Structures are given as C-alpha cells and as structure tokens.
Length: 403
Image (cartoon, rainbow, N blue to C red; front, side, top):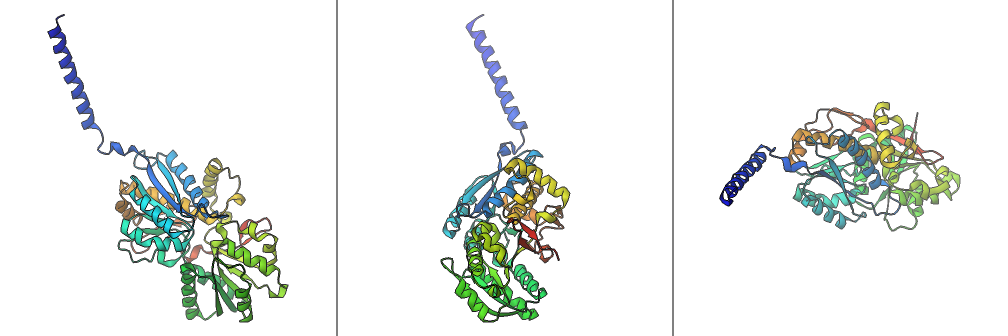
C-alpha cells in the first residue's frame, strides 16, 4: 500500500472522529457540566468551648442530606455537600465567612448558628452579597425583620417576640404574678426586653418588677439575681447561654431554699454543656426552658426515618442521646425544604431558590406539617403553636413538661 493512500485513509478517519466528537458535544445536555455537587454551608460557633449548637445543626443537615442524596440528590442527580466555617462567636469572623461562602461556586445557601449577635452583625454583608441565609436557631426578631427587599433570610426557629410572651404567660399560669428579667447585655437581650415590654403593656400580667443586665465577662450573677429578688420578683425570666445560666444555677443552689425562685429560661442554655456545667445544683433549682420541638413528641413515622439515618451518621441509638435537639430538628427540616426549593427552581441560582422557598405549598417535616412553610410576606416557618416548656430530668435529658 502506497504512502499516499495511507495518508488519505488517515485523513478520512480523522475527519470521521472529529465529526463524532462534535456531534456528541452537540447532543449533550446544556447543563451537563452541572453534575458538580451542590454546596450548603454552615457559619457556626464550632470553636466555642462546651458549645453543642453548631454540631447539632450540622447533624440535622447531614441526616437530611443523606436521605436526599440516596434518593437521587437534587436537579436530576446532583449530590448535596456540606461546607463548614467556624466563627467562634466573633462577628468579624462571621462576616469573613459570609464573604467566602458568597464567592464559592455552587454554594446555594448558608445555615447560621446559635448566636443572634453574630448574625445581626452579618446582616449588611448578607444584604450586599444576596447570599441565601437559613436560620435554624438564632431568635432575634431583626434577623428576619431586616428591611431587605427582597429578603434572602428565612428562619425555621424561635423568635424573641414569641419566646418572651410564652415564658411570661407560663409564669402567670403558675400564679407567679411578679417577675424579674435577667438579660444579657447584647442585641439578643435587648430584643427580648422589647418583646417583654410589648407583652406587658398589652396584658399587664405578670408584672415585670425590674430588669437586670449582665455581661459575658461577669464572674458572678448573684448581685443581679438578688436585686430582682429584693424588688419582689417571684420568678426570673432568664435570657442566657449555657455558661452564664450554669453560673447562676450554681450560685442559687448555695442560697437558702426560700431564696431560690423559679427560673424560666430562653433556649440558649440548650446549645451547650449546661447540664454538665451546672452539675448537681441543677436539681436544687426550679429551672424550665422554652423549646419549639421535642423528639419525645415527634410523629412516630417521621422519627423512625430520622433515627435510622442518625444512627448511621452519628451512632445515635436513642433520642435521649441527641444534644441540642431543636438545632438538630430545625436544620433537618430546613435542609429538606431547601432541596425542594432547588428542584422547584430547576437551578442553584440563589434568587431562583429564594423565590421557590416562598412557593412551597406544604411539607410534612419532623417538627411539624408546614402548609406552607414560608410565603412572600412571612419568612418564619414556626409560630406560637409549636412552643412548649421543658425540664431537665435527673439524668440530664430535656423532656417536655406535661400538665
């Protein structure tokens, strides 16, 4: 065979191969390159000593992600993947994390952590970047009532304007007609003061006899506590995280029994090792805490499905072993809602997913049956109907109070 003939055959074959490559490229789906994972972020307080809240949020997301990914992921086959960042409860770190998340390719939404003051400081950056932000714990009203148009923040959690009335109402139901407020000197504490004042102005009961403030650096809370006691308080409504609450409980336990009045606490205490820090003193104080959900009250079918994956993901054998339960449950439901919104949007474009979250008609979740979870006018998934008070058993497990 001559060299010329071989050369011609090679050229023909080469043209045929090029034609096949071009034809294949033309027949590929337009979004074939989008088989990359869809990213979900957490901006949380992972590095805070004794905190369990960020880890609880991560657990809820991971359980939901596992279910979703095993069912085919989102957008016809893309898997969900989690990216975490630690703000250590420092707002400047949180703002930097938001900037990083906003710049990440395929990052569709970020979950926040427990600390409202951090999220509040992040609001301008969230507005600037139009990063879709989901709040499974932080409760300050302004986080959602932020003035953004359109609003890129959605919450499946408690809010202070619901929490404070519930705690005050509980005090009144227990015939505790005079209460004192013991509040953290932060935007979270001020949010709760505003909610308490509005409720008191509206109802007049119970009477708020005095408000006392404390800073995170306080080594004792006895002066504030005794000032409320001396003002005639029959109960304390406490807004604190685990460290400060444990300090107060230990100090109260050292007082004579007739000087230990009931504590009705906001739920920040449940996001850390409060029981371990308070120790035996906890059983010497009348201490209850507000919650939006309890695994002990969950729908059996939804709970069984959750626990099956939770055992695989984290080795959790029973609901008694779940730390910071509201963070787990809220994040779990929010992840499923986010996945539904992504599929409805047909895209990971944040504006499209944001719009889709407002259009989900209903969802049967772990916490409740949402119908709908959000609307264009309401970015709060929970209401006063979900609120309950709980206590710590002798073994440290948080259980609902049954009347």
